[in-house]
Image (cartoon, rainbow, N blue to C red; front, side, top):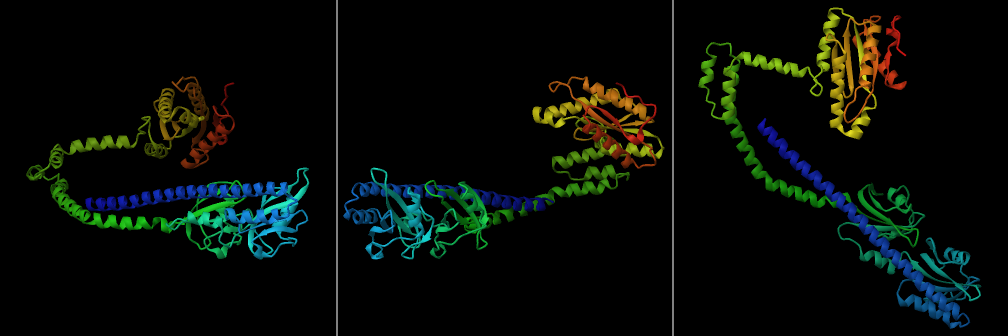
Length: 515
């Protein structure tokens, strides 16, 4: 037993340590991914706001010098080269014709644009960030634009910049700079669930469905989640939404990569603790054997206490430590002491420790006596009304005090021949031998009224509901009688509580309920 307990304790400690470390690693990783996503969302927001500010500034310059035809290409070139925010820039008139473009190699000058982003910019006439689409130059892009207005409010066109999603650009650089080297990676989605950025560039432009994290981030939520990705790998993800565009950033790391250091750590711990663990087990085995020797001798002697030589055999046993010596002294006090202790234990086994009333085991014995002698009896099923409120408002210690007070009231009201039990929680039973239906009802009402009129500090007044049934009744079993009493109790609960209900099959024609 000592060896088994030691091994189990060692294994349990090792397993518990592993689980605790695992949970901490997962929690820390989720927290890190959430902070990582929030940081990137903030940085991307700043980038998009910066591009819109650049376009707004250029729009003012172009609108102010609209009659200067050279201004279109000058501003397009400046926007393209000043910060590298865009892969290409364009100035378009209100009729959709390109008047300025950079780089010129796109060969779109003088042409009328029909792409989704161009049509949206002409239609909205306000600052906008488009959804991804295929451009006139056959690139998958997002288009950021700002309208041009004359001083009299007349719409002149727009200035815009394109970000090529599958080409190198400042947005890619921004996201890749923060790429973690611990197995974490990130991707960006728009409101159409289309990937705007992904480490695997072949997936950019792909639409992703049935992903709980994407669904959450597109509802402008931020947080963490454990999920299974499209490759059936368990991932720990953090996500955050942008403010400048309806995009979401998701960062994630595989659970396997997260726990990989822990596996190595636990193996290292096992190797280091195994030698001392084996030495400890050997020591326990030797010590347990030494301790068990006098106990084994005492046990063998205990099997022959009726032998006249038993006292002499007890005296020669070498009880070298205090406990075995005291045990030997106790055995020498005789079988009478043991029998007395057994009686006390039997009494405790049949008593509810909180209230001092009989318990279920004692009740079963009493019912067996009544049925054996064919003595009729009534069953009162008693339950405190709204007892949960007492525990919730005052705590379980006060709840226990209420239960003890109720037990005392029941004992005061019932006869000495009645058998009072607590069967669990706030439920009590009274078995009243030789009681009729009417006398049982009178007893229940006397008990109910006494409870309702007794002040219990600090709770105040409580109420009970009582269900009544009796035996024998149409040759029903004891279990059936208790079920009938419980049903009557439930009826009392359903019809308002603080009342006594007599089972309909146990009605006594003589009973007259008080007003």
